[in-house]
Amino acid sequence: MKTNLKIAAAVAAVAALGLAGCSSSTTSTASSAAPSAAASEAAPASAAPASEAAAPFKACQVTDVGGVDDKGFNQKAYKGVTDAADQLGIEGTVLESQAETDYMPNIQSFVDQGCNIIITVGFLLGDATMEAANANPDTPFSIVDYAYGDNEDGTPMITNNNVLGPVFNTDEAAFLAGYLAAGMSKSGKVGTFGGINIPPVTVFMDGFYYGVQQYNADNGTKVEVLGWDPATQKGLFTENFESLDDGRTFAQNLVDEGADIVMPVAGPVGLGSAALASELGTDKLMIIGVDADQYDLDTANQSVYLTSVLKNMDVTTFNAIQAAFDGTFEGGVTVGTLANGGVGLAPFHDFDGSVPQELKDQLETLKTGIIDGSVSVKG
Image 1 (cartoon, helix red, strand yellow):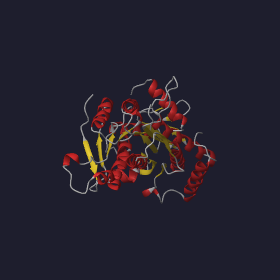
Image 2 (cartoon, one colour; image 1 turned 180 degrees about the vertical axis):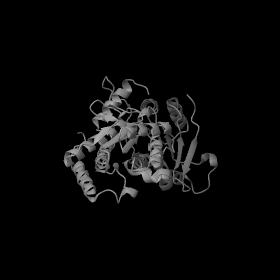
Image 3 (spheres, rainbow, N blue to C red; image 1 turned 60 degrees about the horizontal axis):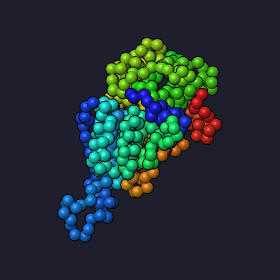
Image 4 (cartoon, rainbow, N blue to C red; image 1 turned 120 degrees about the vertical axis):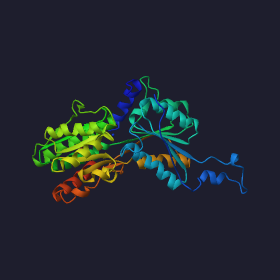
């Protein structure tokens, strides 16, 4: 990842909000059979030649390297595109980045295609998105997990207010997950690890850690968190979002240290952890998923998911597309919280009968406190 002044400024902006060289190999398209409103209004009473027909509204997504079927944030964001295609009658398409060097070419490809809105997914696309947005001020952009601020000289990083940045207070939901994990652990040790040490990843880990500490304070326990120290912002990172083998290895290392519940915050890497849990059995290892409800997506390993920390990027992506479609798009930042449903905790599914009612009641009380501000998730 590039480390420059642009990224540094964005890190500060995200923190302030309380915050998760080859061409792309795959292009997918999701489109509805219904014509777009723009196309319907533009069509004259008599049939016009195809060359004169209005082009359909087109929403275009560029993924991070995890790919559109990552069972995580790329896939969740793309659901917003497909939902928009189904509900608004637009065309949706995606380019999957295989490496960081694909970001700019993929975005430029969509600019050249005349996309009506371009959605980029992930903090690592921040520089490329900013460059493209400033060069194309009339094109709306939306970037998941990035909040642009000002340059060091005080000028805005985005010069034409054409970028919407949905960010998420995932520490609120992860706080609940940490509390749950502490209450369900039999070994007295739980663990977490991340893909890359960037704010949209570490915000999950912060919340998880402090949720465990809250459980300890409320219940007189001493459950230990392995893999992350929010005070130093140092912990375990695979340095990628792709390797299932790393997911297995990092989870096994945490199990070896005594953890019986692990929350991987690393996209598809976490699928390797879940596969390990299936082999070991849930008496040895349970998994907490992130981004989407992994119970629904990782069907081969459903039984190992205690819950998942939800980041509802499909909703924010759909809303950005709809605003561009309706002509009401404005740049800026939106923040997903427990209060507005932007983040949340998934059902306990197969573990529902195993989670004590007292712990469920504590979680509901805690959620209410986070929403009304009486409980801090910052430790």
